[in-house]
Length: 124
Image 1 (spheres, rainbow, N blue to C red):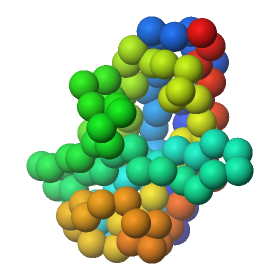
Image 2 (tube, rainbow, N blue to C red; image 1 turned 180 degrees about the vertical axis):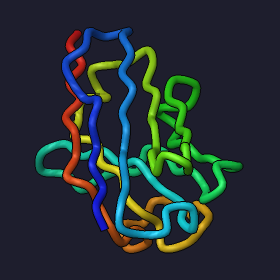
Image 3 (cartoon, rainbow, N blue to C red; image 1 turned 90 degrees about the horizontal axis):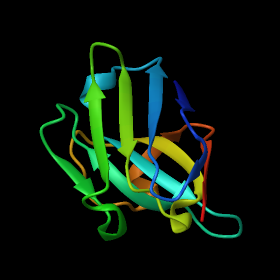
Image 4 (cartoon, rainbow, N blue to C red; image 1 turned 120 degrees about the vertical axis):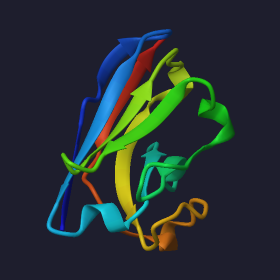
């Protein structure tokens, strides 16, 4: 199983980035997928999750209205469109495979494979 995130970078506050998470080595469309972010010294925090079919999604309160998660099962890829970025969005962003086909919160134990992350830095 391999997850590879990309699309991070340095952006000014108010700007946008689109993160991608490409997957291989498992039956992609059987599982919900989550995005997490982590700052140094802290545990990863859930940002968004999308069900296996893409029919349902969830967002943490701080990103609602600014971030949009989507998936293309034909391409085995998950996206996180991030608009109106704020300095507090600065973190390393990870995608992770849920153990189920639906989202059930952001308990780290519910996610069993993780990518290596992509850095997002938002300057003020």
